[in-house]
Amino acid sequence: KGSVGLEGKSDCSDVVITAVNIRNASKTYIAKTETDGSYVFVGMEEGTYDLEFSLEGFSSATLENVSVSSTNTLNLKKVDLLIARGSVCGHVRLEGRESGNLEGTVVKLNGTAFEATTDEKGYYELEAYAGYYPDGLVFVHEDFENGNYQDSVQIIDKTKRVLDTVTLNAKFV
Image (spheres, rainbow, N blue to C red):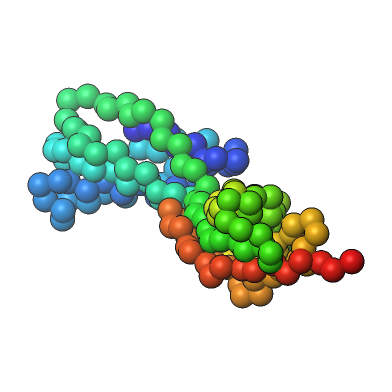
């Protein structure tokens, strides 16, 4: 038995815990968490198991080499699942500026609070929750016209997606 926590949620129900015997994969047991995050496996045979914890929208977690005996109840440590995250990255060029002087462009994931700022080489990495963002990105830098990455952006758990370089044109006064 054990418990699971979910980042940002108080209702921890429906996390699926799959226990697979490492010597015989046909010995597999499944449990689900209650609202408080608790779970219990009933009737497991003795052996060593790997436990995988999963819920859509969260990064999965694994407890490896858990030894189960028939003589006592095993109390496992709490497992916390984090909201699934990934990132997009790339470079921004500023018209008329050399590399080494490209910092300060704010890159925003439209419709969200997620943003990143470019470094002196124009590089950014924007981390966000895994998901599909249909409104793309916007690039904002003082004295330059805003740029848009019109394509939808898909953020995949534990993945970094490299986007094409974006060039912002200088504003003429």
